[in-house]
Length: 102
Length: 491
Image (tube, rainbow over all chains, first blue to last red; front, side, top):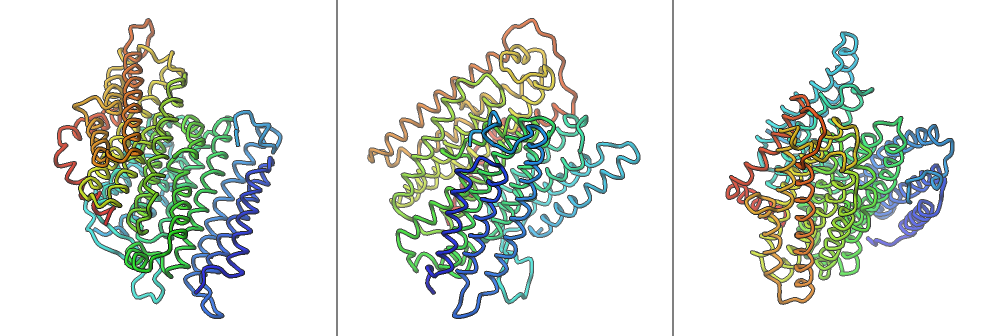
């Protein structure tokens, strides 16, 4: 089994896009979308690693499914914090928040 | 006692916490969730003492090997540390948090955070470790932002969330790569599989780098430490004690478990660890020097102490590569002893800082001068904690640093190691200086009026100060346990 196939290359691309998004965007929602994109890339990589000649190892699907659930939990907490930040500042721009040094 | 019942106990009681909150509020007992949490953690402490070593599968007879838990000396040591600090923080919160809104959520999150940390310590495969890791982290994000009506906790919580989640996802990516290479994520299976397989130098280094980044954000190693000095002051002091005392130690445990125990040795990693450790402790110590806010001061000194622990891990790794098994064991033992010392000492100091802030309603160090005389128990406990972390000789904080330094001396003929040893000693001296200076400021003669905090707040402080002293008195048996833990982490 090869570690490199078209799925795992797509996964790395998604992770790179997500990290770029987190690093450059100032809007808090876009940063969270970046986190989601990285999560998707990592989940895809589990499936890519589980390909066994035409079918996917059930273990890989289990890992991906659990990881999707955990990712949803993280994003829920993140969005709750963003709502609080929005109520406090009236903006989603992270550069307007005095102490955040991203 | 098996670890599955221990985790079931923690999860079952965390389901009961909201119920206790609802029932307690209807009869006017607002602290009911706090008492339930304290009782659950006390029961968990007893059962963690009685854990039987071995490997446990939550689902038996399944065709797919999914999750596995394992108890050995190292995981039991860490689980014990996490639960005991959680218990003391829970007792402290009974008084400290009683006027806050949303106590049900607070205690639920606290209990889930402890459950997550215990799971991290007991997990025997990478994916289970990740699941418990996220449970611990999600609870920690919400707890940092607990006082959501203020701006500082919300900002600090968001910053912590983004950095730590990105780190955890990188670690998860490494887990998926390990799974792709070996077809399993079980620690013990990976040990036997990866070594003969010879994963190839570049892949192995990539994995180690991803794990170091992933767990390293929560561990607060440089350059990923920037969330910590914002998050610790923003959280309630009881939660700062949990974060600084044990949450960052869960990161140390995860690094040691993956890099030392699971993956084969790779050359060069030891120097990276030592470099990161020296950078972390230097940044931490130099930044701590110019802090006027007591909680930021303690947070930076936590970063410095994480640096010492990582230097110990690096020394142990280098000695392992060179085949100096004795020095490797001593350095790892020193790192583990420092984990215990710092968990007790820094947990104690954050609780004391919480009491002092509670009394003067200010976080400025200049406002805390002289309070040590007026609040005898808090003053005595903070003095013990400060002197322990300063490494004043009879206390055990001195011996853990000495063991790390001894581990480094075994390889003194290598120039990089000699430089690391020099910088380590310089850092330890700087830290000792500012801890002792802080202690003298606390006991200065000042015309301020203050009263000792209520017993529920000073009892945990006194218990932790007592633990620091007992650790010193029982140093020989404790060292034996720590060495057992170190050898089970190194395999």
